[in-house]
Amino acid sequence: MQRFYPFSLFLGLLFQLTMVAQTKKAGPVITDFGEVFIVNEMDFVVDTSMEFKVVFDIMNSPDDHKTLNSSIETAARFLNMHAQNGVPLEQMKIALVVHSKASKDIMNNEAYQKRYGTNNPNIELIKSLLNVGGQIIFCGQSSMSRGISKEESISGVQLSLSAMTALIQLQNKDYQLIKF
Image 1 (cartoon, rainbow, N blue to C red):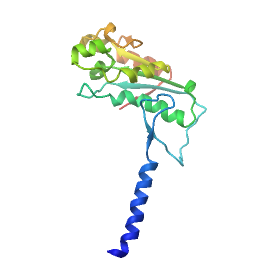
Image 2: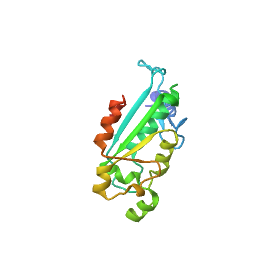
Image 3: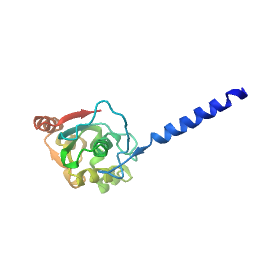
Image 4: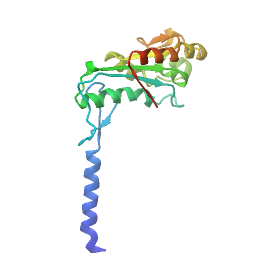
C-alpha cells in the first residue's frame, strides 16, 4: 500500500484543482444571481455577433415559499453566461412568461406576506431582470384563477390576456422558446 501513496496524493491534488477550476461565477449583467460555469475550449463557439431573443416559459415553482424559483434564475444565468462570453447586453432580449404554479413568484412582498407569511424570495431577482430590460409577463388567466390581482404583482410586471397569447406573440417576433 505504501508505494501507491504518491499516486493517491497526486489524484487527490488533481481532484482538488479540478474542483477549484469548476467554480461558478455571477455577473456581469446580474451580479447577485445567475452563477454559471466558465467553459473553456468550446467546439461550438458562441456567435457574439447575433441577437439572442429568448422567451422563458415559467410555470413551475418550489413548494417551499421561502425558496428562490430556479426557473426564473435561468434567465439571469442566460444573460450572465453569454455576457461572460462576449455577447453585449444590447444583443440579448429576454422575456419571461409566468403562469400556473409560478404565479405566486411575481407577487409583491405585501401580498406574498399576507398569503404565505414570509417575504417573496424572488423579488430582487425579478427587479434585477427588469432593470436590465427584461420583460416579465404574467398570464391573465392564471391571475384570475389564482386570485392574484395586477396590483399584487411586482412593479414592472406586465399582465397579458394569457400565457399562450404572450408566448405566441413573442415567438412571432422571433423570440426562441426555452422551457424547462
